[in-house]
Image 1 (cartoon, helix red, strand yellow):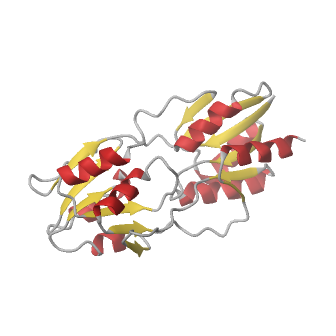
Image 2: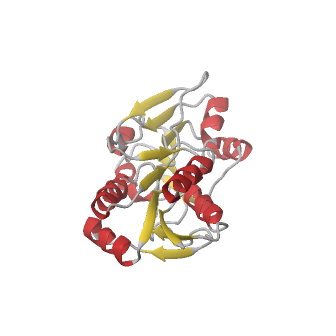
Length: 247
């Protein structure tokens, strides 16, 4: 039996665990950081919480006799990606990153690419009604803008609420259809979308909806990583890589 650690938090991570669990010689262990209060059901073993940095992850890999690791975290979760790279290198354990290809602007898209959340917030015009979909961990900069109205969609509702008249929180977990996204943006009079370029299909509906409605998109570029790591863009690529490690 071979233990495979999946650093999860994405739908791809769940799909990978479910796929690997069908193999009788693989024991998938999905690790979640614990930020989502009600994570999706996942087959195999599940652990929640951090490891305690690189040293803690190295200790876990060795003590649990993990055979290989998949980094299936969010494309913007660069710290755990860096920690995984360092820990696997130290423990001499194979590592592959299961991630999404970034979206590319198409005909009809009006993208304003920025490097980070701070630039995204600064680029929102005064008086805009912005649909913010960059996650609940980095909302404070938007709250500091008192000259915009924000519609914020999150998986888990935050404890702090928006002041009356300055915006609205809505809870939802994708994937969302293009039709639903169009109706949402029209219903709230949104005139701008703010998004991270996280790639994949589960949240691409909002990009298509913005295109159909002719709305500009403030797009936060994915972070650049120069780590020498195997990159897999599909479950089949991930399975083939693992199969190669086993042979």
